[in-house]
Length: 295
Length: 172
Image (cartoon, rainbow over the protein chains, first blue to last red):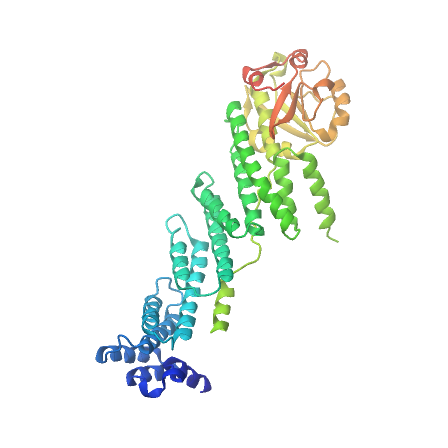
């Protein structure tokens, strides 16, 4: 009961404008909201918009945006193309547009921020299942998030790092399905490079850039077989060495700036071995075995 | 509202270190295995060695052995089929076409050279200075890539004729 009353106060902006100025149909819709009867609340507010001149009423738009947001949560939370969410954003933007005195600003921003994060989450989820056909969908969802986001720059930077990392992982997953196709490989490198552009000591990006470059070199060599001509063997090897050389600075950076782990050791060890630096490989191997000795 | 946002965010967001899986294959071993196969198919052994199996012995390097078996074990060398053996200890008296001696068995090269004296066994090694100790072909690292040097005198003594491709890509 306490919660419903509080919600009603928030929806109607009572603290700021007083009950007297609230349109009766908006007030009724807000009451239905407080009772969690969102379908009825939506019908009520839509009726209000038809029969009254509410087009410039920020309170009416905010209540409508809130109702649509709740309907999205109830009915379409798993739908990336949710119409309720889309309409909620449109209504909340209208509310912001007409809220010249910033009476509803905090609540509008909170609602939009909530929706922003639902777009962000959808972008991450989509990146985990994207393929060549749908590789732009996470980007579109992420753009919607950024458009609505109202938090701090520092937090946004962390979120960008996270999104770009997930995109890189998504492209990596696609690339290993067919390592002949360099499209996803190039995009994977590109997204990890974006992460490093935001945070050049990012452990995940450095480690994975080392691994992706290294793996590409090994995959080239794995293609060598009985049909490989001597000349091809030499040129494939030279190309793979370029990849191993690309991997080494990332492997070194990950090793230097991340918490020591068997994976960090393994990556630096393998890249050194692939480059023929056997002594360094053996030194790291010995050090790793000593450091991560299991009892 | 903040609490809801936070819960939503942590449901999806996973900031822990996500490492792609590294390919643990030994690329140097893969390349050395291919070179050994190239030496086999691009060289000519005396007629008395062209009977039975074409025996390749890998001494002291499991990774090279594994790759020779996996990739080339079923391939022919002329009319012969390849047989690959991995030895942890050297077995005297076995007439092989190629013996690859890994640097981990460097100390045993002199003994092996004595064993294969007068036989058409191509001794391949992978450490600096091995040609001087009697090996016919030695892998070396040039600009991080595996290349090989060869001793034409040692090959001639073994009555093994290297093909043009082998000669063409040797390094000094």
